[in-house]
Picture 1 (cartoon, rainbow, N blue to C red):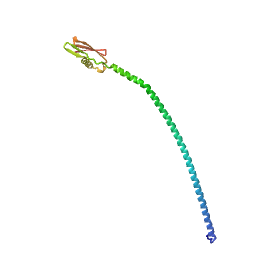
Picture 2: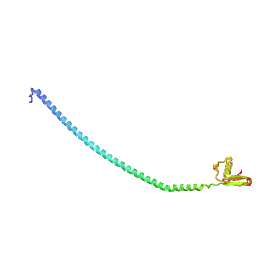
Picture 3: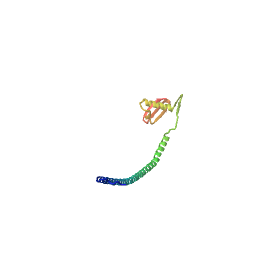
Picture 4: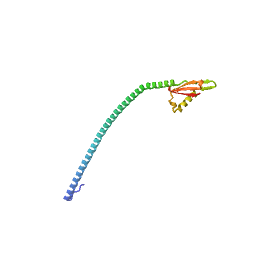
Length: 174
């Protein structure tokens, strides 16, 4: 049961308290409503931003995929071109190798040995060629400079005459 106010001041105070409580309740309701509205706006903004971000990611992914496909196509094209160049160059390189092998096979000399017997003496070509090379190096030439050696044997003089590279001549004793 409600109590009756004793005097006018109490009445006014009670009414003031009621007004304050009502104002506080109204303010609380407004605050709760404003918070709910703000939360709703934040949620909506977040959803919008998430949707924008999703679209941006999809667009970026599409661009990256396009770029990757383009790069893959370029790599494939370059690889195909390189393969074609190798296919074209391979027969030529093989021909060159075969030609070099043929030349090397043609250059391979038949192993020969000539032995000169005259009287009681015997001289073979290896010994004569070694003696010619020795004379060549004594004249301050290099053995690697020799392209050809021609030997002329004269048993009656016990001599070997030689011509190196077609222009240098000399004589050694057997």
